[in-house]
Structure formats: C-alpha cells, structure tokens
Image (cartoon, rainbow, N blue to C red; front, side):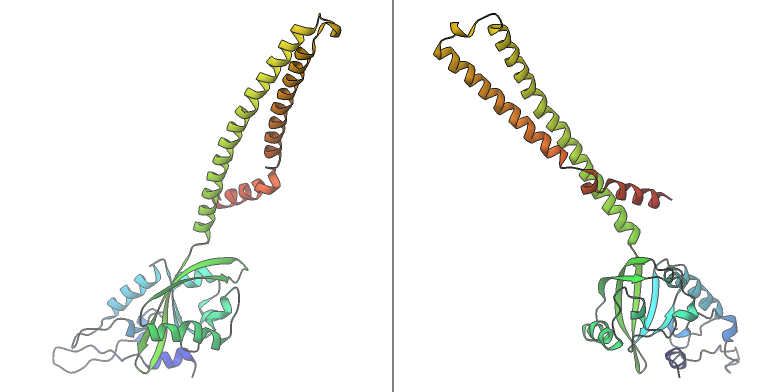
Length: 273
C-alpha cells in the first residue's frame, strides 16, 4: 500500500450513537472534505464527531494561511493543505506520496532527509525551526521558514511541518537596508561637498590675494624671505587641492554598478506590482 493508504488505515472509524444506545451507521467520508483526516480531531471519551465539526476543521486547516504538511518517516508527503498546494504550484495529486526533499533547492536523498530531520525531531521531542530554499513547479526559488515537530500516531511516526513563504519579506527587508544605505550615502555626499567647498574657497581667496599683491611688482624687487613666503603659500594651496582631489576620488568610486541601483529599483517595482 502507498504511504497515504497506510496512513488512512490507521484512522479510527467514528460512529454516531442513537438515543436508543445502538450505534448508527458511520459518517460517510463522501460528506467530508477529502483533504481532512478524521484522526486529527480526537473526541473526548464517549463524545461522537459530527461531519459539521470535520467540515469546520477542514475549513480551518485550509484557511490558516501557513502551509501544513504531514511527512512519513521515509520522507514522503501524506497530507498537504491548500496553502501548501498553492505555494508549490503542484496539484495535490502531484505532491502526495512524493519525497518532500524533491522540492528542495538542493535535493538530498531519502536517507539524508531521515537523518537530518526525522531522526533529530524524533529524538528531541520538541519543535524545531529552520529555513529552507525550495523551487516551485513554475521554477520560482522561495525561502521558507519551517517549524517541524515529530508526531507519533498508532504504530507510525510522522513529521508535522508548518511552513511560511518569507521570500518577499526578505526582499523588502533587503530594500529597507538598501534604503538606509542610500540615506547614509546621501549624508556622506552632502558632508563631502562641504569638505570640498570650504578648502576651495580658501584656495581661491589665497590665490586672489597673491595675485593682487604681486601683479604690479617685478620679480627683482622681491627678497628671499618674501619669496620663501610665496613658496610656502603655494605649498598650502597644493595641499588643499590634493585633499579636494582625494575627496572627489572617493565619490567617483561610488559608481552605479557597484551600488546596484538599477537592480534594486527593478526589485522594488516588482514588489509593488
């Protein structure tokens, strides 16, 4: 038998009890959503399960938003809810009885999955959270946050997996980080322009002063001490201009390709759509 059939065989047969005390015929499975297994809702001793309760459970499981999967010890999927079906892009029939690792971005063998996930969860007896990368039927790469727990039932053991697609959330966080980076660069550029402005104004003022002082004087009337003062003034001007040049060089290294402006803008537009 397939894992799905074996799993269904472990489910208890639920009966209604009539007022006379004799059991009434079992609830027909045809009246219950085909994705619901009655064993998920255990009644109190002596309390029957009604199809209405199962319908409510079916609605709840399929509208919870998170992706639910039940995986047997061989790593094969025996139950999925609607969110998981939508997320993967496959039909329920295509998912059931298939190895869950087939959907991983980096596929692993059934034995590897059993050692890495099933046996760890079985020993720990506590929920474990982790993040995986998977590929949908349409080829989309997604990041999924998963919380999984080992769930024994009858003589079988299963992994109950609750997953949430966080791909867009991570993209938005990355964009926010990039926005903060752009803001920091804006402050950097603004501060850098001030670094350029004031030294250049000082240089211009110094040159204008030298020009005004010496434009009508002949070189032979300038003494050695005054000449050395002119050389020192030119050295200061050279130093200020060198600092401005280094500042401009820092700015020119912040090119578009390095900061990936076009890539981030395209991603933002895609997320808006």
